[in-house]
Structures are given as C-alpha cells and as structure tokens.
Length: 258
Image (cartoon, rainbow, N blue to C red; front, side):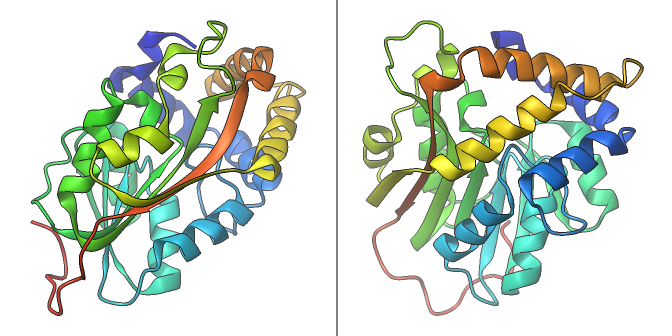
C-alpha cells in the first residue's frame, strides 16, 4: 500500500468499479458472513458487526455517525436493528451518491472535518478507515468534538505488531489507539485484538486470488490489494477499540445533527 491510496479520487474510481461488480460484493458477503443485502465496508464481517452493534449501545432516538461510511451498508443495518437515526460521512463523492440512492442522510466530508455540529451525535463508528486520515490524532479529536456527553466511539482497524517494522504501511504503523484515544479526550478506552476477524480476512484475501475475471476492474483491484496485504499479513493486529466521552447524555436530543 502506498500514499496515493489515501486520495478521494482513488476511492471514487474504486466505488465506480465496485458498483458494476456483483462478483466482488458476492465474495465479500460470502467470505465475511455479512447479512443478506448488506454491502461491505472494509473487512468487518457479520460476527464483527454483531459485536459493534453491542458496543455502540444505541437506542431508538439516538443518532449514529457512520464516519468513512462508503456506500452506507453497515450504518443502515445498525439503524435497522436499533432504531437509531443515521448520518453517514465519506470523502468519496461517488460512494455518497451511491449511498443516497439507497436512502438516508449521507454527506461528503472527511475523517478530520465531518461538517457536523459539535456535540450532535450519540455514537460514532469508524470501520477500517481511520488509517486514511492524514492526521490520526485530528481524526480522533473530530470524533470527540461531534459526540455528546456520554457518547460512544467504536473503531475497527489494524495496528502494527511492531511499529518499527518498516515493511508495514506507514499509516497503519502510525496508529496507537490505546495512547491516541485518551490524548484525544476519550475515557474508558479499550483496545482488543480480534484474531477471529483476522482469520476470516485472510481467508477472503486468499479466495480473492482464485477469481478469474481479468476484465472486471474491481476484481483486478481487489487482487492487487490482496497480494499487498498478504505479503505483510503477519505484521498486523486486527483490533476493536471502544471509548466514550465523559458525562451524562442530555435528556432531550435533536433527531439529527446539523
């Protein structure tokens, strides 16, 4: 992986290709055990989604920010299960347009500049994307800014087993959520390894390399990523991080952020 992979233009092309590739969506759903009709965001599978829903502690009337939401499939599924309100933010205009076509409040923004008002949401979810922020501390501070007192943050992703291992992509080596989350103002921080998620991801990458679809740009892109990821797979940890903002949630909340 290299730095150009962090640009919105690259993701615009990826989502354009992905929208025309049912083969990739079928592979992701099958290998990750996603619920029927839920489009993947990152490498979070069905079991991981169940755990994330529990960790978010959402109720009807709460508002969830699905940050770096892609096409919005995970956020919509969480809203369906919990009855919460949903706003999705992503820096890919193509992904946001695809999400809007499926219904809901989706907006173009970034990990460090969501465009939402301070203290306007009850929970923030960042699935497998925080590494794409130019400044990881700034991204975490933005999550803190938009959360109400008592709000919850859930982050999934990867961290380097050894941050000094230069074979690991730099943006992943920069992540140290156990340190960075408290520095951003969060309390109750827990960062836990998820080896079963990691095993499912490895099986997916290996299966992707068996696909024969040289004319499908989404498959070709996925296979290129698979080769890159598998070459350093043992140097990364799969993690689930949870944290919250101190204080009690207010009794009355707006139904959606400004």
